[in-house]
Image (cartoon, rainbow, N blue to C red; front, side):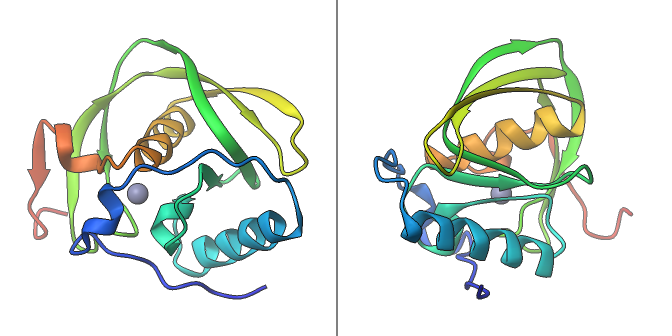
Length: 153
Ligand code: ZN
C-alpha cells in the first residue's frame, strides 16, 4: 500500500466527472487500498478517487464503523433532512454548514463487482452524499447555508 497525494480545490481537476469502473482487477484493489491508507493517514472519514487524481467512480468511507468501499455508487433513496457542518480533505481550512438528507440508501458494487446496497443515517448519510458528489465534480461548499469562519470553533 502507498499514500497518494491529495488534489486540492485550487485545482480544476476536482470539477471533472469520474467514469464508471468496468474492470474489477488488481489495479482497482491497489487503488482502493491506497485510498483507505491515505484517508486514515489524513484523518478523513471519506475519500473519492478523483481526490487522488484518478477519474473513476470509486469511494472509501469510514465514519468509525470500519471501512466501506463503494465502486460505481448511486444514491437510490433519500429521506429527511439534517443540518451538518462539513469539511473535505481537498479543501484545507474550509468548513461549511449545509443541508443533507438524514437517511440515504446507496447502491454500488464491491471490489469484486458484486452488487451491494447500503443504508446510512446521520454522518454516514452525509458521507455517502459528499463522496458521491465528488464523482460528479461537486464540492461540499457548492450549496451551503453558510461558510464557517476558521476562528469560530
Ligand atoms: Zn471531500
